[in-house]
Image 1 (tube, helix red, strand yellow):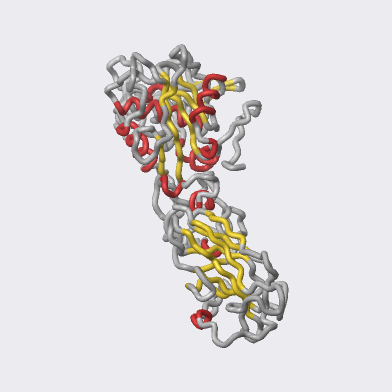
Image 2 (cartoon, helix red, strand yellow):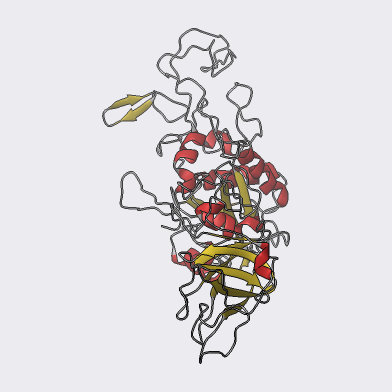
Length: 478
């Protein structure tokens, strides 16, 4: 049976038959199969035979030359990725050669001087999970993501490493800034799949550490409740993934002794830390507690008793939290606020200097960070968590129709005079001016589609060029 991959499997290869002629293809002594683990796969490579008749094909077996047949490949192929091996298991991989008459090198030993009739290697697989059906796939990788074309089935559904559902023409199928090979095979040094990553669904990784404050021994440590609330907001994000589902998968390592163990209590001799994520204290703590393999994948935050600052289009941020705050929702909203800066968001959506717009229902907005975003169109916080979708109309502080309010036709008495009027002038965001004053004019108070910016750019931005205006970012692993 010949498959489109150009590989042929034959059960007859297990039967050595009569001894082959003396001129069957062979290698010189010392030749071996090179093998490396690539997550759940084993990549093998071997040299062409060096003596006897030219090889027409190579056969790959497990254990011995008569062991389990993996594949029979044309002589033009001298490398492939083996799938279907059990995790954390030692294997002997054997390659034999056949000539055009199907004479094969299998049992020959020590004849015609120095010759090696089979070449072998022994390797132990990793524990990255199942890799599909036993086979040896071509190593061609058109998009350079580390995942061979033969494994990228482009249907959006991950079945195994040999049926990854990814796009062979796109190195980052789900466009989350993490190459497919890292999410499927762990090529960056992390078993991201075991952490919950999926190459056909957007993922966002976050490690949270906290300052060890004697007066607040556990209060700065993020709770599972707070992180779960934030993860729920990302899961409900209005973005579509190649797997046909919506949302962003937030994977947070918050040091609770559960699935991850990367969260750390950080000790400072004086019990305080500067909240600058580019400052020497932060950098020293990150160097001591953050695994280098996570760079370019994980965002990193240190919880402090005061302050809070986040890189815009960056990796790192700090967050000031209240000691033993009884409201896990507030903790989650402040955490999502600072993470939002890393994802490219400002206090006015895309405007740094603007804030407190009642029609911008986002935790980035100071009006709603503490109290929660507005869900009933009255301009007041409702303890909800999330970013804005940019659905509300702009507000003109020089001509406000109180009958329209913010949305859904809910009246709002902006000037608080007890009367709902068709036109009033009022400073509704408390910045001391009517609308936003710019160097070349004024700007209305506008809602902002946070999720669109995050999807289009923020998830893929992991470093910031501070000198650029606006800030620039690059994809992970660049």
